[in-house]
Length: 487
Image 1 (cartoon, rainbow, N blue to C red):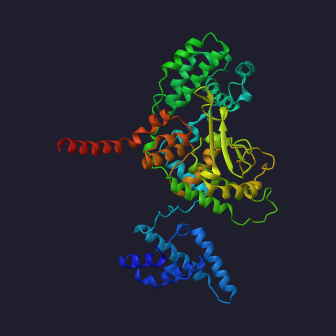
Image 2 (cartoon, rainbow, N blue to C red):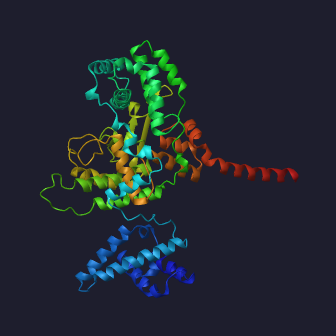
């Protein structure tokens, strides 16, 4: 279809406002010429028309060329031309005339302070989303642990050796801090190392925390009990068996919310948010002597767009995004191809079937459109972040530090929510990706490959997605089979 065909179809369906028909036709002529075509009849409605940043740049170059030739193109003409093109492409999209739908329209981005206030006021799970529901009001930081607890903790770390990663120790320390803080602030006495292995006291904590957050049993308190049982086993503590029994008695909490019931963002919407972040990251830099790291905020914004682009194409776990290292997990081969590679302890399941587990994607072959953005980030935008020259991590905060779990969750979650009005967190990409892919293809094997899971896990987790479609297939088969039998 050409621009002329699209315009004719819109006029035939009376979808084009009569008062704007002439101006829209003129605007389309400008676009056709800017894209290098002699007329509307010669200009196809291709993928460029779906991206305002692309045809907008082509128009600006065309207008600058006309100005250089002595023709005056006013700011009003430029603005009206772009508005007319947006209108006609939206109309064509609504009439089903485009080969692929337009990217979703994003919300006007509010200030972060205004958005956060509204976010907290409308949070469906107040104790989950508000800070007073967390451990900050009563936790006991590791620096304030009594000497016997610090000594016991060091002994536990030593006995674990290399079995646990440093990040696991950190998560254990945070859980332990809440339990010890509970003993000090709620029970009203200084905690001891033996308290960490007291089944009665731990049971009381589980009940208290469940009441605090208004649930039958809380995930956090259950994790504290599981951690205590694991520590007791490593240390050979006399209460190891009793703690294991306590752990086994605690049933998994009911989900706070059902991911499938979320009005979540689509892959297309995440792609649109990513494009907006990339555009903001490329904005000209302001010059300020007070700025220590000029361009860090722009580089950080571009980085968020790149991460979202990566997640849309490769549904990685949040951990792999945070820990992704240059030349180790992301590297370029002798042919210039970029590869994404994780293996062994890099992955949630380090060994599978008696072999070291691996996850590998040749990005240059799988997502060639992503490579120019990656190289722009490496060569320009990433260099604006403090610490980029020496850090092995691909993604850094605007202070030059590797992302922690909470920081990445907040950065991406707020960025998407401010643009779409819907809640998002990085791990949700795995459900979004699998759901859209399986609804479209029903191919569990490929879904398992992209998610880095086994086929059995993916079928167990996402089987219900294609279940209704399979009933329809079975119905059609049965109807045909019975016809053949009757004949």
